[in-house]
Image (cartoon, rainbow, N blue to C red):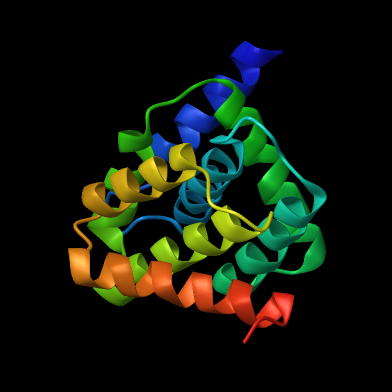
Length: 160
């Protein structure tokens, strides 16, 4: 079964660029984005219900998916994350086909997921930093995204 899942994912990424246009398919970009998000919630080796809900919410919003589509995408991305595919496989696809604004949004999305359990783990921070680097997101934008996520955490907890 795992071989079939791996083959499916490899097929999706190999079809990521449409031969005629050089454009990435929306599905492949969505799957790559979701896989990075899954890796982020797993970075601290503990996945809370808040993290899972935040993952669902931010992916649905960022990718403009229905509830059913988001659930299916997360299932596929989790299966792929279980296979241990390199971050580069995902980030190279995103880097090539997303604008800088979209890449920064992905970094913000990863920070939101990282803070969803109320704290930031050093493994999560390392992963988000690595993804930002692979996406060529400027350090200043990386820090702004982190501060934005921290501010959202402070507002959610009711702290001044």
